[in-house]
Image (tube, rainbow, N blue to C red; front, side, top):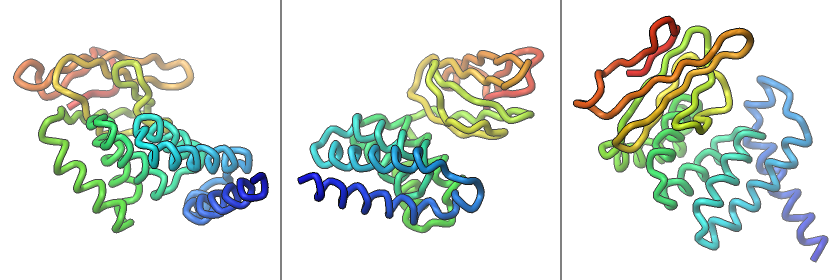
Length: 195
């Protein structure tokens, strides 16, 4: 049983290592993070097979954070969509298209999910100079700071917070789906905005 688990762990680690090749070319991936990503991916697969899609989504997103790959992001999208977390699934689709738009399988999945879910959601584009971290209703949207980020939310009132490292401070931006909110919102003095 222990040998079987080790073989499965090494096969998952090998898959993650192969699909994270482009990431390794950009930056060195910590072997410990790769090991954690493999464990989280494996646990996510088990949760997905058992129909616990919310748990699977969290595990796949954690694995993606530790060792980004198109395959892991696709599984996170599928899991969020199955868990009926449509806004998060759509936000992950936007990330997938901007990061892995050249990957045919990833792009096809992202476009299909967006086509189905986006009409019921509010799309916001956050633009920051310099790059910022973004929170939606107090939850991190993406781990990496970005100058432009597309995110989706359900209809209603939401808080979008853009934060900068160092001495800069964040700005809270409140928007509702039109006609309740103007198309662009920003806080006076902030170098960012939401459209």
